[in-house]
Image (cartoon, rainbow, N blue to C red):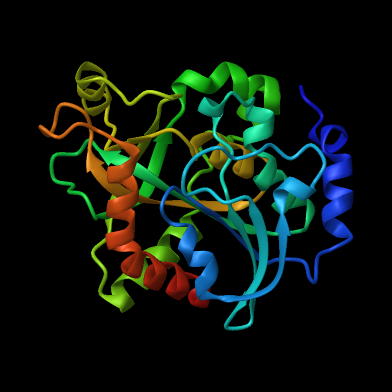
Length: 273
């Protein structure tokens, strides 16, 4: 097992010296969803480039900041700049924001992402609440990170999502009159998009949306006792389901169109938690 406490001791020490409060809820922002950080009151922003051993985010739309924010009296940690496996980082680096949230005594985490729609009833612009996830192709790395005993004894693969969190998100969507899909998020490592054949396989085995993040964060969060949930912005049809060529530009453009609904949903969820 990798000892994250030792690996990131200096990182945590640098953060603790600057934080204005211990957050209640952590929010990790996915591709194209980073603007949410500007929609709440920011008390303190820490550039991740100033922190020792914090990986640099290299993907468009992922700014490197930890924001300590307030919304309706709730104390938030907003991670603006996800660390992706396909950028060449290890899983022990990719889960660093979750580790930080836990060490700051945060109890709940909302993971967001941009995803390709595999379910034929999904369309670009939909929001999807994860009912489950598939991380079959990272189980070896997860075992090294969490330990086989922890994965099995703590049911880390089964404890996501938090029933309480998902029920709250569904209630928030109902109150805000925001259509909310529900389905299985399937992880691929990237960096290339999935082939049409791979998308057919994902659908055959029960996947509704496919992306390159979130699963390891969700499993790690669950394994260390955080209540976790995930919301996907369906930004495109997965390969083979549309004549359009997939691109990160399309992901960003669709996220821009849906950001109002996303903002309303997340704000109402925070209010109800």
